[in-house]
Amino acid sequence: MPKVVTKKKGRGTRGQARRVAAKGAFERDSLTGHLRAGEGRFETVMKAAKRSGLLKEKSSRIAGRVSPALVEQAKKRTGIAADTDLIAFALASVALEDDFPDAFKDACGKVDARLKLGF
Image (cartoon, rainbow, N blue to C red; front, side, top):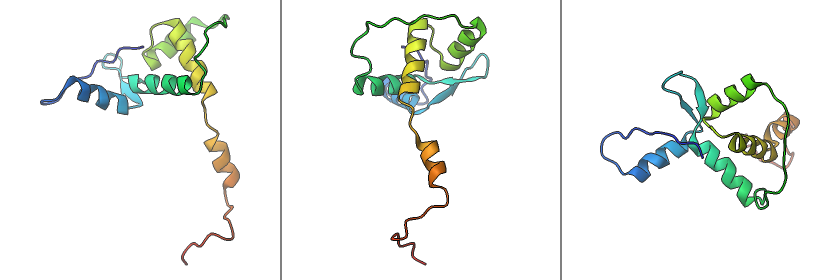
């Protein structure tokens, strides 16, 4: 898992600092100023994939040629250093992606006639 350094403000426990870091989906890289996926996002996606049974067996192998610039940028954006973790995170993100945007767009302008709107 990627390591995220958190700065404690005032007096607090180490656990409090980790919980604060886990709440943010993105963090700003102090060196480059770019946003990257926070440890919380990585952990959340991977825990959801595990709960969904997507990480039970690790017998499949994936290979392919991709642009080094793509890999470098993805690693910078996510803060993930290992290729295997980056691939697992990307696949889990796609596998767990919800269809909310499509469902929201499909529902646009449609209101159930039985719904009492109060006016």
